[in-house]
Length: 67
Image 1 (tube, one colour):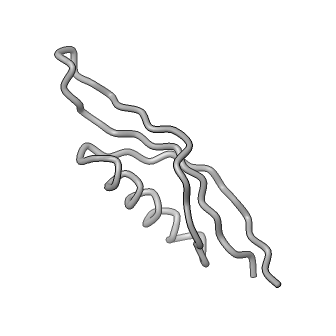
Image 2 (cartoon, rainbow, N blue to C red):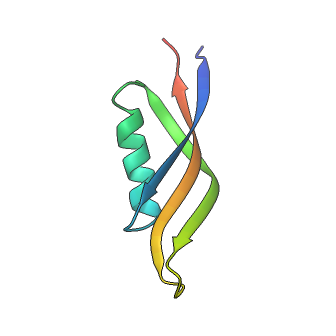
């Protein structure tokens, strides 16, 4: 039997959504072990005055197994 816990975090990237998610998971993985998955709650785009995308931001939940 296993028990999992969920935490929520935000991450950003100027490259894209996938890079923001990867960055968030890598950063969380430094202190959280046994990560089993993640799901995105929210995606936001920060734009320049001309509408060009400057930064992607994601809010996500990370599921990990508790020892």
